[in-house]
Length: 160
Image (cartoon, rainbow, N blue to C red):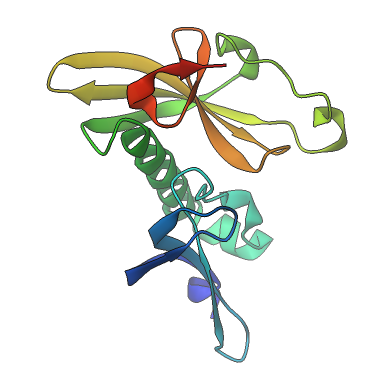
């Protein structure tokens, strides 16, 4: 059963995200020992697939697959932040100190440290080097571009 303990799923029609009012066709499903499924619909911002939430045995036997699911969730987030235009490639994890504009949240010392990745984004008219951070305080992905945290929708280029 370890193969199906926790996995991503796409479904129709879209459902409301477990953490906000957005609707999504993506979710994270879990199957218990009796075979019952539970579904958590997740939008692009709240849909980070954390491979560390897998059981130790599953993580040790499926590390490559779990990392692929993690990177797919980051890629989905970056493309969604750009209006579903273009493509993204996760270059790899990076230190939080290398993310221009990132400030450690006040409550961060109470939780796991945030995680960060370097990402290359490409669209017809641009190529950009970005950073994505998963915030344990806010429990969502965040996009950093040119030293600023970008707030959705990207097209308005709001920076906080």
